[in-house]
Length: 194
Image 1: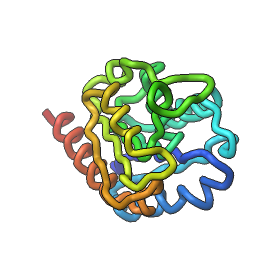
Image 2 (image 1 turned 30 degrees about the horizontal axis):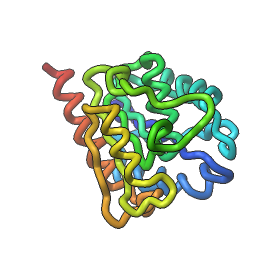
Image 3 (image 1 turned 45 degrees about the vertical axis):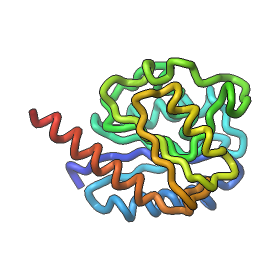
Image 4 (image 1 turned 180 degrees about the vertical axis):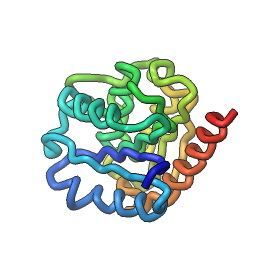
């Protein structure tokens, strides 16, 4: 269907996550957004053992296939790698929004990981004038809710969405994410029309 806003959903990491866990997030987001949106959900390479170098190449390839105004959403480690990939080198497309869902923070105060660490000036490295949203469930036992606050420290322009009673998968309900995506898509269309 022409004219649909594209949304790219990057899965989290772990054995079977694409087909047994994050598929429910894809289903929820697709249902909530409806026919006006095209939600893409690619399988990331070696999902059981996410690697920044491998995933960032795959993410760049996926973003290059999008149209301007597309929204990128990353869940868990997929969000962590997504935002760092965008900070490392600007995307070829003008994004409509960047959305992190339950993304672990890698660096001081967060998780240790080989290969990369969130830069202290992450927000300044992200594409300008692109809204950034950080969603985190307050009952997340995988990536503690304090990780959202760590992201706020390095992405001062980010809007935090703390969701009471929600777990790492946001209880498989991306309704709040969908409403933000719709709002940002309307805002991008309004700006383009000026």
